[in-house]
Image (tube, rainbow, N blue to C red; front, side, top):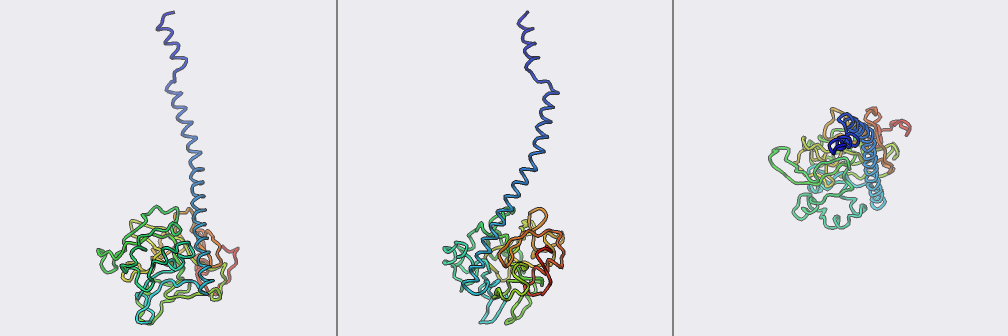
Length: 305
C-alpha cells in the first residue's frame, strides 16, 4: 500500500465531516439554550437577595433611629425663619439621618446639618456613593446631574444615586411647590416635610404600612433618586427622595415619583415593622394605596397581598 493511500485512510478515520460538525454545534447550542435561563434565574435570585438585604439594613437603621429619637426621621427638613417651608433650609432627607445606624458615622459626623445640602462645606457628602442605597439590578451611573426646573441648562448639583425612596403617601408630591411659607406639606405616608411620625401614629398597623420602596433609574429621562436630600429649585426636587402611589408598581404609564424596579414581575418594599415584601405589578391599585397610607383605616390582612 502506498503512502498516499495510507494518509487518505487516516483522514477518513479521524477527520470530521461537515454534517458531524453541524451536529456538534447544534448540540452545544441546545445545551446553552437550556443552561442560560437557569444561569439568569440564579443571577436574578442573587440580586433579589441583595435587594432584600439592603432593605433589611435600612429597616433596622430606621428602627434604631426611632428608638433613639422616639420617631422616624423627617422626610426632609425645610425651614425659613423658623417656619415650615418646602424649599427652605436645609433640605437633608430621611436617609441622611440614619447614616450612623448604617455604620456611616464618618460621613454623618462631617455633615453640617445646619447648612443646606449644597453648601460648600457639605460638598464631600455629595461625592459619596453608598452601596446600601443601590439596587443590584440598576446599572445606572453612581452620580448624576440635577438640573434647574426653571432652566434645564443650569446644573445645580451632582448627586449620588440611590434606588430607595421613602413613602410620602398617595397625594401629589409636586403640590409642595405651591405651599406658602408656614404651611407644612404633609403626606399621608410615613415621610414628608419636617415629619416626625411615630409607631403609634401608624393606625393601620406597621405590618401593612409601607415605609420605603424601590425605584429604578432612567438615564434617558434623567430619572434618578438620591439618598442626600432636597435641593430647592431642582427638577422633581422632592421626588428624588420620596415616592407616591399614583400608579401601581412598574406601571407602563408611571411617572418619576412612582415605584419601579428591574426585577421581573414586581417591586420590593420595606414595611414599617421591618419586614421586606415583593409586591406584584398586578396588585390592585386600591389595595396598594391602602398599604401606602399610615392611618387610612382600610381593612387589610397579610393574606390580601
